[in-house]
Image (cartoon, rainbow, N blue to C red; front, side, top):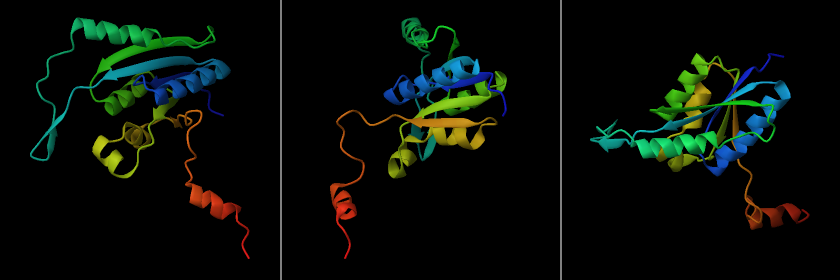
Length: 167
């Protein structure tokens, strides 16, 4: 088995990322790995004549950047033995994840995913998909479990059909 010395966890501070972070912490603890937590401050993109372009956006204010740094530094593993490093970079999230993974010689990327499909993925893009396709190390995508009390992802009529004995 290939040793896992460095784990990269990109975060957008969502519930999906939080669930992936907990898994990354467990893996880092179990393998004695260093854990890098990365947040990418994405530049706004606008479409013009069918071409996505980055407008000349003003850089984030010092207060905004400080708030992001504070939120990032607030991410700690419950096991204090896990060495956690925090990185805040600007740019396209997928590109930044791939670059940091290369630079830091990461052995694993643990990435939360929203699980969008179809039109939602087409319109929103998929950071996880690009990272999966282009990463040079293994990528573990983690979809957060449904909230307690959430309805079943399988429609009721399908469940009834499965429970009904066939003649």
